[in-house]
Amino acid sequence: MKSINYVYLQLVKKRFKRKLKTVNKFWIKGSGKDFLVETKNTSYIERFN
Image (cartoon, rainbow, N blue to C red):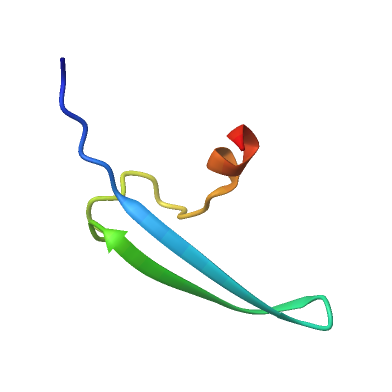
């Protein structure tokens, strides 16, 4: 079985009166160099939840 190295990214979005003000990225495991895709979003994972 092939070992997969996972990269964990947490996005914290702050809104004020329904408008997005800030998006903070926190690397839980790994770094930006380990992330293979240029855009860092969680929408594809949220579809499965």
